[in-house]
Image 1 (cartoon, helix red, strand yellow):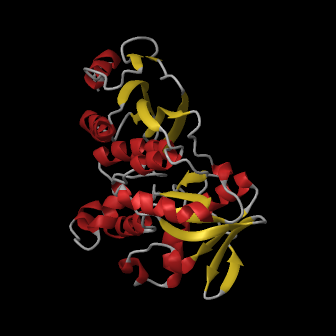
Image 2 (cartoon, rainbow, N blue to C red):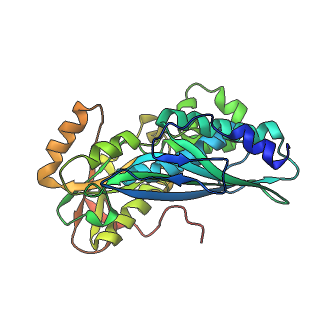
Length: 327
């Protein structure tokens, strides 16, 4: 590895895309200036080798791409515009080459370029342990456009922005066959890509934020059962999910029902969005979304009470299991 200062120079952007960034990498701290009428939105996520990824399932570029994607998904769920990010990385003293570490930053830069956001700082250390990467992202949203989990009310329609279960289905194949073999399986590759390179729904998050209706929103990082529960708890209500309405690829339906449930309800790392809107606004919202190139699918309803329930074959049962948690 180069010395610290050479390393900083090697990852320092030549220019900034965002006018809000006044000082980036090169000083003791970054300086950003928020736009008038906007609130600053901040999010952070940490990925640990052996917990969130391994070299057997992802390339260095994939790891970097996904580390930024999970943060962008949080920004999307707030209806915000992403602007800049900060990266702290702890690199093992053995097992990771300098080129692989650079690959992580290349993966982040690839996604950052798509969303026109700037790397403005960070920290790098070496450790006797697994690789750890922590990304903090900043953005902004208009003061009256924030999309919060607590906005749901009884009578609302629950909707999602895309298909469910694809990422965990892809991960299962990566774990079974390894990255190189799975990448060469045409029928599986779209699902492998959904796991390795999920695309955060920033554009549709912004679309939803710009609608003059009450919307609750959450990103699906730990499975829709978990994210629906977070909305229900924040709003003091209950959520009923309709199993037959959940958008699931036919490929996944070939598996036993128990596996389908694992992938669709609990698998996580989808980075689609789940939201709620009043029944009277639903059809207008769905139509407007389609006109803008987005597909919203109704998957349930909000009711009085508490908890998350699944309706299937005319029966309703409470979902007691949650998605992935660290504790």
